Image (cartoon, rainbow, N blue to C red; front, side, top):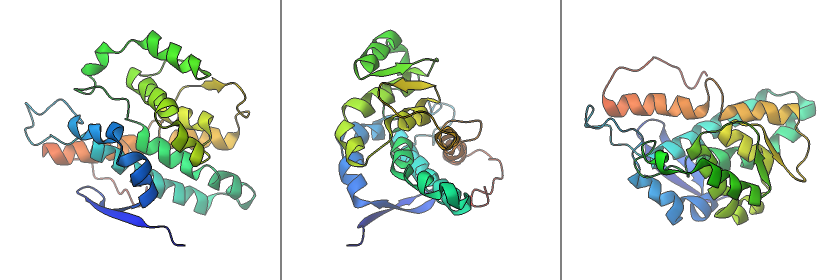
Length: 221
């Protein structure tokens, strides 16, 4: 049977089509809906219109991640196309959940996080972070592996790649498969010098604040 979709209107990207199951399993949960109450920036005093939230940003990153992944699959060599395609759900769910760990007041509230406590909880879930990662990213990892564990399992996510995508850190998980060049390349979709996270907030922040933005051709990129 055809996949049922929900279509939402985004002021930056236009109409975004999302699998109805993704809505039910992730977007409609209290943990994701709380992002509606967390502002993307803390600059509303200077820019009163900049009241956009982590909620629409996360959906925008999901959309751009999907577009970029489609482009990668279309252009990748035939001998690795199947391997790349196997990671589609992992990439898309990481894009959608990458900011799920943000605190109230966004980065300001992050100062109340205890990094060592988060790492201890991650170790309980057999995740060992070997390099420094942002506190909200580690919290997103923790929420992913606990609150959304059943969802990740249902979509056959590659847990190692999921966490690499969110934190950009070198992660190790007992029993995980050895890192491959394909996974290493895909991890840059969400965490690199110019990734889909940055592409969304560059446009979204500038548009909401009412300031001139760089002229970037997202479709071409």
